[in-house]
Length: 72
Image 1: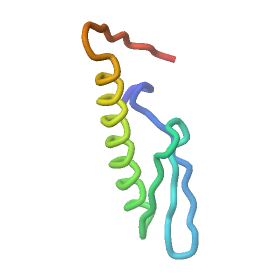
Image 2 (image 1 turned 90 degrees about the vertical axis):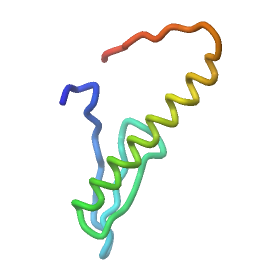
Image 3 (image 1 turned 90 degrees about the horizontal axis):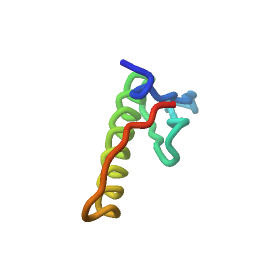
Image 4 (image 1 turned 180 degrees about the horizontal axis):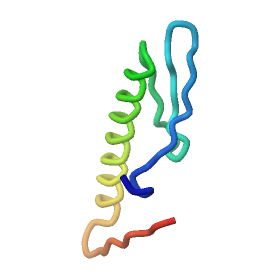
């Protein structure tokens, strides 16, 4: 997986739950009963957030537009 598809999860155990956030995208967070479940839940939440952000961007750019890849 290249760095364009790599995100950082901040995770911690809080009592019986594991909770986590994706550093790079505000609002992407989740919880799980195990660390593994948390990672799966974060991955799912991240995929949904990226898809929703893409849909919103394309709707806002209705009509003629171009797309450009930007790497950091």
